[in-house]
Length: 111
Image (cartoon, rainbow, N blue to C red; front, side, top):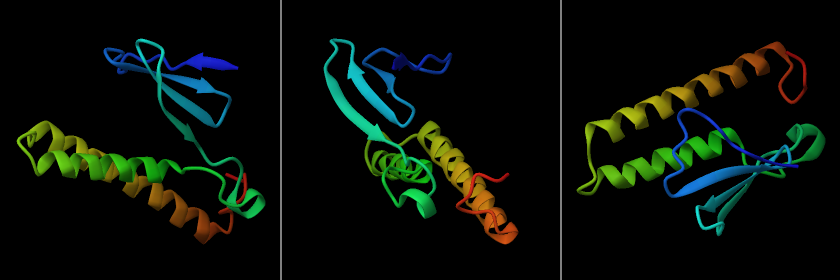
């Protein structure tokens, strides 16, 4: 079931995002040309093995891209701030994993 990602923070100037099932995202241009597809991890690694991208992977990709911008004439305060916030997001996700490991529930659907 395809569903368009809609958010007040989403810009659809050049591209838009469509959910193609629960774990797949498709990035299309405004001329309906697919330019990317993302398959997120389905299930726990313990049960399903590694079969997709993790949120942490996507954040790291974005951090790397902003680093590349910051090394060019595109360097700006806004990019630096966005990078910091992405690093903060990654830190919170790592904290979650550390806490789940400590409680013995990592790799499960337990809270």
